Image (tube, rainbow, N blue to C red; front, side, top):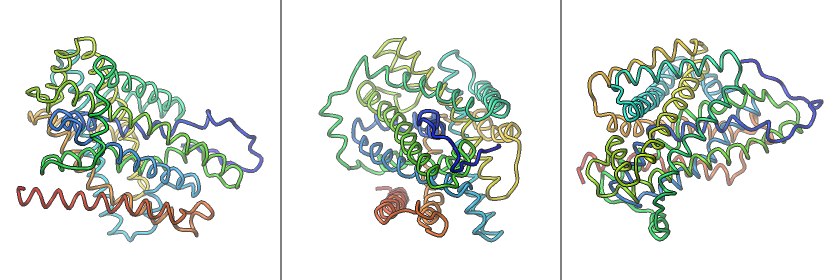
Length: 412
């Protein structure tokens, strides 16, 4: 995609027209995997894991800004910069794990959209997954033909639908403020709660979103070559990230609060189908309809962004470009296979988010090193406090995954 290089002669532009890339990346934070993880957590444990979403969203804001900053300052994507620093075998191994993460992402998105179509129209899951894949191909065709800004407009419209879909239930039956505050205290309740926390973290700090954000801003704004243009774009990018991730964070927390308030203790609410039925029973068919529409919008938008991310990863690490529509066709296959085999879709969604969580350090560690490299980033290199914060994020993710493995093996 062609990009415009900013120079000292670029006229001063308002901030609003510069916003958009972060809202595309934010779709990754409200995909059907989030719905499964957050609804399950709220239905099983009430408000216990609210703190996980708050911490994860704060992490996401810092991480996504670093990815965007990297793309603006260097004019290259995170996968490109990683690929240039690895030998061939290392590069192939890194690409393999990144593709596994991308596959897990795509699995969640297609299955989630299929569930939504089943809830709305009774469509068989396999057929629903195929429909989601075809519609997402149409959305990618919009990007290919009309450019990124038109694509951003479509994604932002879907994000608005998602937001309405998952906030509506809280308007009808709001949670008690005291319960929400109590959920901000960090704690767990056994192995299963750790598994869910890991799933929620993987669904909130998304590896493929980290990779793709550097491409989104580079493709939209180009390479900022002068100080004035760089400062202006970085300021706009901070606003973009805070606004977009703020919306995504509110939606994620709303999902958990909805389940904790209206679905806790109700049989079958640890699945999306069961949660939808309980929402209809507790809050009425109107809220159930809006819930399902929000889920469908989530699946359609996120699967398009996920395909964009996969293409960015392949091009950056292997220097090979597969047409987006062809890639979309290929990456639909695993999700359709699972749907055809009758695998429980909600379980597949939660496990896919755990896989994403294990992929986070592979994206975060290179991002930390690259954005802290003064030779690469110049004056935009991370200051010590940012380096420490990013290091803490890497450590938290790694420790949480190690605890998950230990609890699972010991059966505690």
